[in-house]
Length: 266
Image (cartoon, rainbow, N blue to C red; front, side, top):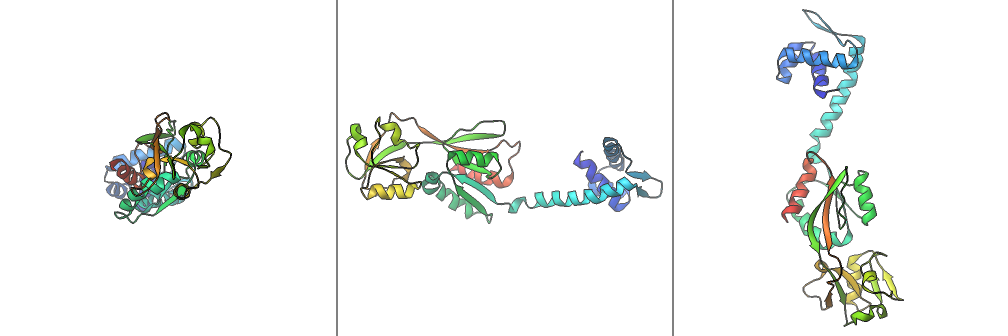
């Protein structure tokens, strides 16, 4: 059912006039009549009884008019509220803490729009964008499907950090501070440490390493200039890439495009 035909029908029924409907739509009267005729043909029902003096609705026409008015109101509410619609963002903890926060602060200075942000791991972020829980997500996963697609933003360099010097060949002798069971430290050593501290907070991981509790593998952008830590490059590890992921819109909604454009500029 073409929305243009519904709109032509609603205005014609509302004004009881083809000419007034045409004036409101800024199209020819013949175009209004044609659109309503196409609507009737698609429904297989006569909706309007035409006469030289006035427009009369059939019983089915009256029923459709009432229903169509409600639909039209809901549709207008949806699109007129576009400017006030909040943005729902899913992001990895490390990216929020050390990369995205300055971008977000800059964005919020330019808009009154509400932001709802959730820190999740990779599976939940992917599930969230697929299920409509998020409008946009930021991860290290390149997701490409019929429904969603990812845009690479930058490469993330992973480094090994410690308070004291460590023997790279004997990492298993150190306590490991990891984010999850998929932490990069498990790729660096053939043997696992007998002492592992798992924390899903990059901030706490950094604090623990600064305290000399153990070693960790982290993105280099989480390091501070005044950190007195030993930092070891990891050239054998595959580069981690950061992606921005959204649904495959033909035309991205303005409330999502605003933040997407700012992220790409920065």
